Image 1 (tube, rainbow, N blue to C red):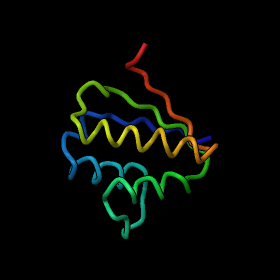
Image 2: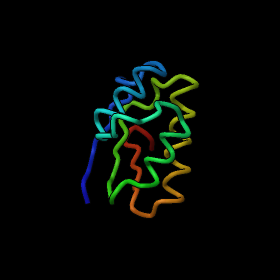
Image 3: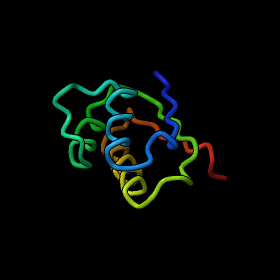
Length: 87
């Protein structure tokens, strides 16, 4: 299983969040850069472990994106989420 570390400090706002995820997760160029498109691509990811750091810096949109990750993990058994900054 591939492991990718996501630094939430790179996701300060909606635009940066989607740009960072598109680059880091190697999304296709046609990625729609919204939460629905994020969900669709996360559901199709090959087995991968995503480690999130610094989630405390995320504002409302970033928190909504985290919920999208959680929802996608329920649909994709190959998507494992790890939140390192939470006890």
